[in-house]
View 1 (cartoon, rainbow, N blue to C red):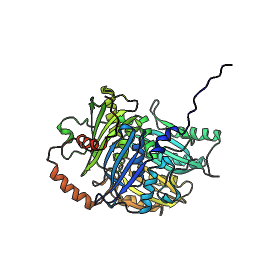
View 2: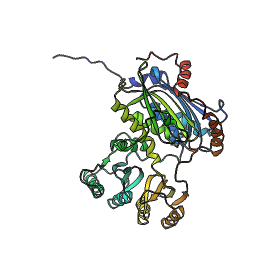
View 3: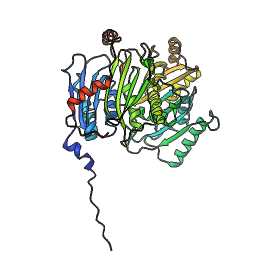
View 4: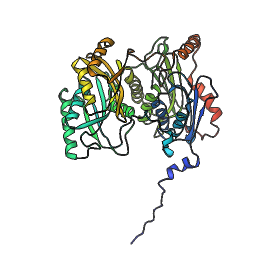
Length: 480
């Protein structure tokens, strides 16, 4: 009998570098008067940049600038951050949370560092209903009503609309006994009923998808998963962003999304320049698109200029190749435009919700909106203990703006669940790449930037290379 010897590979081997060189996170409040620096040095891995940005944006922190380098197997990043009022990050519990959250993959977040009241993530055992379909008034109301009839309690609900398409995720549990729904016959019945609801308003051959997924190692970040669903639905095909060519691409006063992709043959990179209107979570959406398209960010500089934001990325495909085909370049351009404009298209009157959580709450609220001729362009509702909290963006049935006074009358019918009505229909002009900042900081910066507007523009690439050449003495050689 032939004996075959195979080498034993320790399953912890891939974390060896991280154990030898543990990540280093520094929260610096001394270098700048108007912001806190979050510095991260860590062993590099695919998706680490998205993880870092996700931690900061989930805390509603403002990222005004960022310098990124991940060459030579090492990741170095500097984020300029403030809270939404433009203040430095000084709360010790928040600082501890940030430090441990950025190192979460190396041991998790301690109980002392958790921030109660911020976490509205779904339970790990909740069933996920993922759906993409044609957008239409009353869609969420019908879905939530069917789930209630089937004895399912919605613990978290998120929904986006983009153009004529809609994507939504509902996390549900057993409404009678609590806990996960595991009966395969019941699960098949739930999916069949939901598919009937969606199918009823689609023509033969129209794209639609209804999918129930059981927990398997946790859930993907909700907003990242919505991006993935929209991408799978090919919503990017209807985008018509600017390609960034010509002098008109950066025309003064233009707030359209411009994407310009050039090839750097010497280093084997694609240089991706993005200019768009600045708004909350812009950096997260852009990095999310690059990561899910399997591009690796080697260097990047991100900065806001008044109401506009400039982003420059030096990327290469995860497999190491740099394709120069026009079709791939065109697809990447459209996907970036779509990722940025999905949130822009979700306009509407924002209603903040805080109510005692109960089965059928979302169904009751959305039913009142539907009966009064209102539609919802965006939903994000979760549970915190015994409370249901979140926001709903409301438009009229045609997707146009609604009168806030009329909405306030509708909220009275709902009851005390709606605690605030925000009369701003669009992102505030002073919003930064991750959240809104104060009017005072914005006005001061805008005066300085107007003086610089007529000066010759320089490439962000020249800036990043000047910084990185001083920092990257330990980097390995870059293959051309």
